[in-house]
Image (cartoon, rainbow, N blue to C red; front, side, top):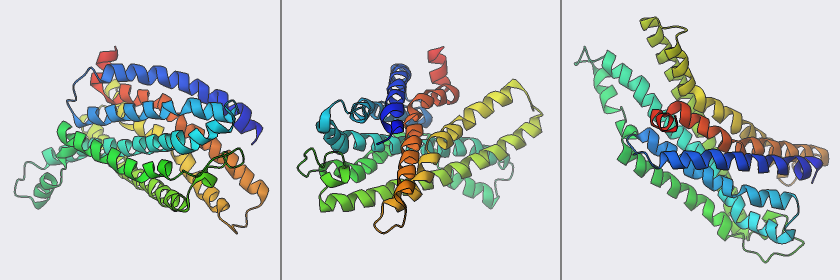
Length: 312
């Protein structure tokens, strides 16, 4: 415990809970009135659901950090709301990856296919059509991918709740690992490696997709000579908003998590002060990940014309 975790973070979490609930509640009201006419809309709708689930865990975190609910609230956090928080966070990360792939195949591959249509005998043109992965833009296929994504995360993360089943008391309630069975501790390790690996894979996907998009957009702008125009600026904002939110919210936490995890291992050689500092840093960067619920509506507004027209 520290002043940062006990006095600073709880009011900040409460503020983003209120702001996020207002923004995502409004986004849900808008999104679920419009048809799922594209894969992008399907992925964005699922991001709204993930954000609302993530928001539902914030009040329990605030109450636990303020020590308002006794040791019982810590048991609820360890067994249920912490699992909901991390599951929702990684759902949002995966849907950002799917959105990036959908944008890549819509912008880069479509332009490449149209530019090479003049030479139908070209092997490159044939391969582009075969591997265009247009199903990412198809609403029905996007819905299937969304269901598979939810199922995958639930299968890996739900046992963390079921296996945190040791009898709780005032002594062990504040240490989640003490509430886990031996199998639960092993499953926690495996699911943590799986989740972090998904993040780094998604980061590579985003880097590749947006580097390709930036190159393609730049070349297109040079061809049509629209540099510094309003159209160019709006296009840049809509395309790269998701990249800014991803790097701002999720990258700091996962970079910090590597040394923090190493410091928790037996015989790590980290001093008490180093472990304490890493814990405070981890909690601070985790707050940035939680801030994602307030920034996602910006993505909806900039990327989805249907959402923007409905709102305005």
